[in-house]
Image (cartoon, rainbow, N blue to C red; front, side, top):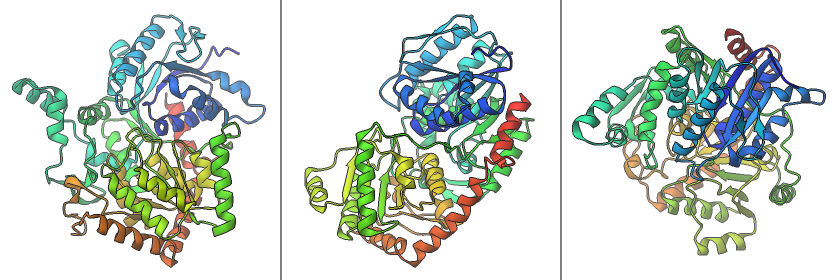
Amino acid sequence: MTITTGKHFVVFPMQMWGHTRTMCTLVARMAKLRNVTITFFIISGFYDRVMAEISREFLPGEEYLSARIRVVALQHNKSVAITKDVEAAFEAAYVKMCNGEPLTCAKTGKEIPVHPMRVSVAIIDMFIPDAFEAVRKHTPDTVKVFVWVPVATHSFFFYWAEDHVDSVEASAAQRGISFEEAAREIVQPSGKVMRSPLTGAIYDYELQPQAFPLWFSGTLLKIARVMQTAHGMLTFDAAEYDPKTAKALKAWFGKSSRKAYYAGPLIPQGTENTSSDPRADIIRKFLDEKLALYGKHSVVYVSFGSLFWPTDTNKLWAVLEVLMERNIPFVMSCAAEFASGIPETLQDKIAQFGHAIVAEWVPQQALLDHPATGWYLSHGGHNSTIESIMAGVPAIVWPISADQPVNAIYLSEDLDVAYELIEVRNGTGLGKLLRNGRVPVGTIVAVKAEMNNVLSSAFGEDGARKRAKLQSLRKILQASWNEEGVARREVEEFLDDL
């Protein structure tokens, strides 16, 4: 079936699964809500997963609507942290589209024909600003470019409300250094006090509690320029997760007659199909066994997403030892790009413990939905945060970088539905916390003591209270995509405004 009417969108998320998975759900719902065609650019390594995620949104009898989504795989680097090549591949493909030439899917080798409707809207991930600029360069007057914001939006006012690109470029030129080097000096923590209109003041190093590599400093600054020049913003965040931020961000964009649209939560409506993957079956059986042996909410899930990993791994090993000492079963994902191998001595301990699984991949949504899963030891990335809320699983947050430190504060202090680990910090992140005056010790002894205290609370009355509060938030967010839900109205408004 060929669609010859309606608008034609181009969509391109960054090569991180959390950024892409939510976009899969969004484009499928857009295709169901309005007569639009969406050319969805992804990296080739995600092709099969993307097709599976999109199909979850189409109920029997709706399959014909999937023809509105044209998935185009691009060649890419293996490293998530390097986006230069995939952004160049996107620009080349985009130029072909503008010139009326067919595209070729790098995964299937199939030709994707020229679409009769020219592109009028592009939705580009904030973390690939060069792709954003490519659209503006080649179609400056004919295509509206919206920025895709796949982070917790309450981090916006700390990072992207002010544009420093011009001053950094001038500094780099004057001193004969690269833009990236000059940007790193700006982003590097120095003890400066940072403020947001919605939260208390914090030191800048509180946003980098793990001394995570700042290879993306230039990108962080360029994002602010994207925010200033985009036609508007579309985010996978949920307006009702942090209503004050949603209101403030809409007002910020409104000052320049632009709009911010909240599309989240973007949790697929269909069941995650893992029947063909033996790894999923192993984890399901493990969870079933622990449910029978330990009861509901007994298992801790440990994951730091597809990129991040604690920079001081000895503290992670110490936390795993605490879990085993307390006889708490756990599943740990090592899917992160920066994940490091577990020492042989600890591997032996885990094997002898017998109530843990350490895997390179886990079916996260299915795991969170399992009644045996009780707590999620997470980096606080927003996709994982929303997924855990929607599954009713509270978090123990180990923030590393990006939006995670602000999310950890919001979850543990404002919402009071999580615990934040403080002693796991290292480097400049060990400085005094402005918000409460606490100074982390940062030793292995302190890490183990804090983890023991948190687990005692989590598996006690306080944890039960936090879990109950989380269910109230979950119920609110579950209604976001109902007929009159906030997210559905926002996405319909976005589509109609175009």
